[in-house]
Length: 510
Image (tube, rainbow, N blue to C red; front, side, top):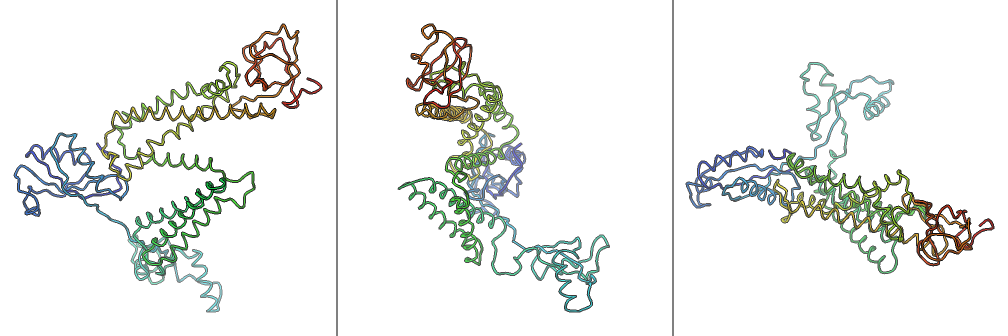
């Protein structure tokens, strides 16, 4: 049974060849997928006479194909879906015609009914009228009736006799609008068309804000590039706003300009302090995660429960299991390797291993860009994204490889950058950043025995210089020699580690 979720209805003419048995099989397929059969004719007869060549062994069905996805190119999506489903049933079929059935709703005003005969608290006519109008607008006299219609239809709908027999007398009922569409200053498109046009305005306005974020953090020609992109996105937003309503182009353009201006101010952050301003990388990562989530949702809502059980559940289980088993040491192992250390040289608390696992899961979300893109492509009925209900084994394997490769790349980048920052800070003798529970500290190393009797590995030890300490692990004091630029390991029981004031020289106590 195919998925019952659908967004579009497409009227298709499907030619089925092969005779009565194949016709019956095709009808079962249509019924199994929830596609109503409106009618059928022998090929070349009835309304098809003179359109198709007569063929007694061929029948043309008029079928309403229901499918998820956008209205854009939905006729192509319906054709491909029908072809794939019927090909799987081993039937010779041809989609002769596909036409979307657009059933959009008119944007009518919503009205609230109220009791116009309610007594007033004053005896003065003008004041009584003003008080009653004000109280009515506040909803003080509302009754439990709400209607939708034009300005002329709303009073009649509100005054219709109640089927329950109770309520306020019809002559005492009036209505007040709950929106401003009744004024007629602009003419609206149908509801879903209005939503699509509004989404374009929002999308271009958000593009203005993102371009402003990157422009604020760039210099030279790169800043000019982002400024041009922000300007182009702003123009596109205003043009999209001008088409927001059937009439009232100026109002729509003004609304779009205000939205784009607000996003521009948010992107530039003039009201924020210098240390709290937006930066390009967090904005890009946050936008990427939201896009991935949206794409995966679009992809998953087109799948049936059978596909979930056969493909998604094993994939998620295998990835989650591998992540939980390995994430506790993956990032720390990569970090240690970049510093020429072994994973055992870093004594990491368990809580930080859990935190690193969460970090790895965020990498996993960014590595899901490929399936998210596939979700957007299927939603838009792109030609390369098959709209059938099956899932290809080759795609499954490529998807798994892409996800693992993406996670590995992001993990390597994270650990590598952290190690590079640590090495650079150590070379300057500055305080070094921590990395998921690994907190290097400057120490002075006091030998408990003569220097020539110390055991360990690494460059020559100088007790007069401070060293960067990674702690004690497996009985060894793990240090970093800033002069040699490599690790030094000494037996922990032969030395004492005393905190140093800085990475330049040892203090008096060192």
